[in-house]
Image 1 (tube, rainbow, N blue to C red):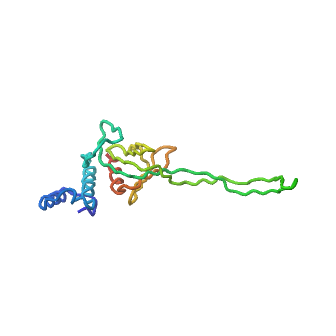
Image 2 (spheres, one colour):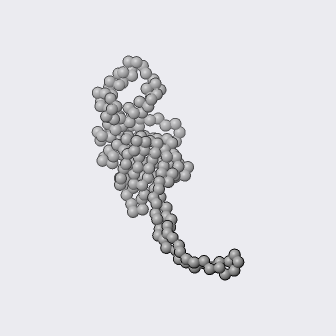
Image 3 (cartoon, rainbow, N blue to C red):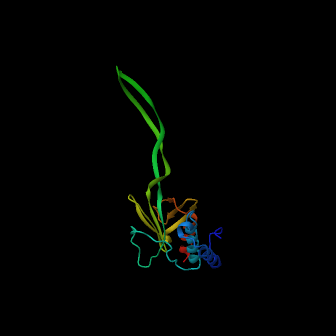
Length: 196
């Protein structure tokens, strides 16, 4: 039933009947992550139907984010690695010249250096932390970095097997990557919420 990633109401009813018939506990159902997959599929179904999903998770403790009044928490991922693209510049070139001996052990060198700057883009690890998805924003919080990105400000969105890449709208914005979350679910959730 989870092959297409979406659970229909009929499929949901069958699953609930199966669970009730065998009296399965949640720990058994989520042993291989199946219950989380089911919750994600139900969330996507609600969003695709134009509804803001009810939270399907229970949190112990407080979130480090200040949610807006109209904001609804949908999903939280823990231990997510965060990377930002940075540009490193170094010079490459050659020098030429002549060394003239003035005295024993003392030389005078004349010459010139011809070179050019080389820029290298690299993804720099910024830390691991918590990613929260709401109906309006994606949040990240760690000891080193905190950020909030409204879905409406996301210019590009790239899905990876174990992560998500995106770039915000803005002249100085750089690509950012979250690694260690369900890329397919996150991509589809953000894409569909952005359409609402």
